Image (tube, rainbow, N blue to C red):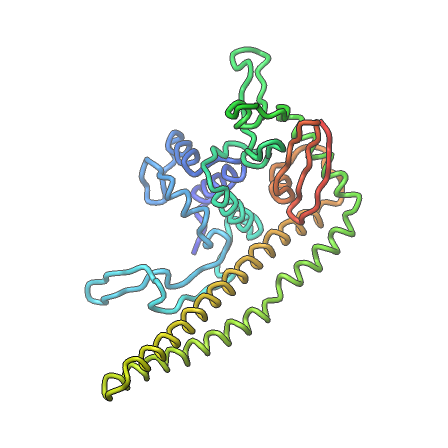
Length: 333
């Protein structure tokens, strides 16, 4: 694989715009309006193309082999691999366009937006990041005095005027949000070494999946044995005259056991995935905090995304930043 400089710059632009709060739809429209060709040379970008670029591990230098496979070597018909043949993941197989840490940050942001459970424009780094302390709704941006020199962007609760009694939380100017973030980071930096030590300990715990792996192996083996017992019972019933009441009792017992093991396996896999996601979150937080030795003077979008989970705005003027490691820092408007 070789990097094509012009196309690589487009990929970097897509990742940068996404982390600035843009949606795949907005990015696709921007690229189309700018006349930038798609990977296949077309003029019009689709949001699906942008989504594929954002989630493709090839851009961080890795490769997942056999995502698709050839069904018929004569017709050359190919099919998406849904477990029919093995897949192989190769790390560092080629030169990266996107830094692995940045790629992982984008995956976390993709998942965060999915977990919102509702549609949000995500047109800014602060989209779906500011919560109303009164009703729990997110803050949205509004432009005041758009046609004058006094034009300003403010953020206020999206549900402020929707209920019977409006939320008492105040609006925030965008510049002030940035200042409050820097204040919160300053408080965080005072306990920097202690927090880094705590993060390292949590990451070690999250990285240890030996107990889950052992349980998965045990459950898998028991499922295999149970499946064998079911098949043996079915075969025996087909060749011999068994008491059907006894047969059904045994069959239902084996099937119930298999379903329970299947459910347990699914739960263990989800728990392992949750730990992996949490590890990635702490890893990004740890890397950013470890690399920040001095208090930043200016607002940095990447730093904001890496460190902040969300911020809650209260009616009394408090803004509480909840960082990705769980730490909370209170600031005031």
